[in-house]
Image 1 (cartoon, rainbow, N blue to C red):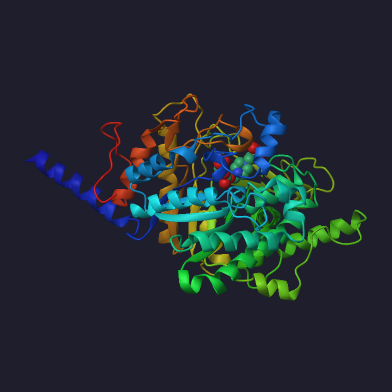
Image 2: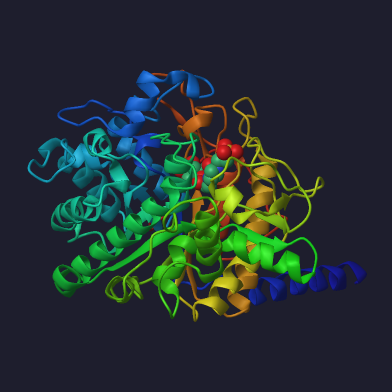
Length: 505
Ligand code: GBH
């Protein structure tokens, strides 16, 4: 009798919590990857060289294990296996990026590669065949080298080149692809690539490069958005947005100066790219642009190092998006007075002038920059909701790294994903217009300057094996269960490590 009552109570309470916290049926669950990180085939057919081919070949010591993406996970030859993995997981959607120089070997649109287009047609068709929604990023960091030789993102013609490329892409793939993302992570393109040496093309134009790049990038995004809306969306019927890395930067204390410091940091880290597109006023973020203007004059520059948008440009860019793609990994606490570092003058971090702080007791991943942070997604997304009038949001990346020898039982990754998805549910409860979630990543891949020393995959990839065999980690089974049930069951343990494709996928 007693046992029956207890069993009844247990099953009842389990059911109510599950029913309270459910992801909607039309919520898009997926995984994300990027061309240079997985494809390989770096010189297949007539593909042109890009800036990651160039840096890894000419300057390999900047990569931690001196590796490159020449073969990577060899998706160029394994794309059917990739789609099989998507079906195993039961994904609704798959986010991947196109290699510009695979499609346009010269960067410019005078020549379209048949082989490059055929590869992406095959990949997309294979997804469509199994009901998986492709979400395509036009640019995830692999600029054609020929365009870099002309200055890349800081050449004033960049927005034109980018629109030419995008039009080719929409013409070729827009009949099947209905979710477009223009850029992945402008901050990493502009700050890391042009203001520092931490990403290709390592321009290191401190305090200058980031701002010129930011304006050109935002203008290029808007051109492509308008081209799509005017000339493709009416017949193709899709949506077009941008993905920005929005980690949470909260004040270390409640003091007014820490709050202002946190705001300045947010303006620099992601507001430079979000504000011109999503804000009411348009243009670069106010406090930061005033600060940079003032410092520039003090430093002897004839004008601000941060360019301005004309009124016409502001109007062109404002509202030029259908959604806000958010790559979110962590939180950082910001102080106006503590942990201030010496920075080169001029430079982006000298301009911002705030200190960062990460509590010691937040769990650490294999990446020095990544710690599991409480309420991180909730804080970031409710902030965007309040600031920008409830935009449609997709989380286009979120994930956790383990070390190469950590194997298949990745309980720390599972803990991270469960906490992140709880935080996403909190955001949904708070009224955030969140439509989907893409886990980074479907499989292990080339992790930029970290090479293959950090692994983000739900599937492990054996990079010693010419076949680049993929094997599901424990987290793959847990993610599959969440997608299938729309519920986060913290007790769930996979009964075996054998993956199958369920009916309907
Ligand atoms: C994403 O960036 C990228 O879109 C994706 O390609 C990448 O694989 C994934 O993260 C995992 O890293 O080395 O200390 O200078 C996330 C934001 C910003 C995280 C730059 C790594 C480098 C820190 N990234 N950061 S450091």
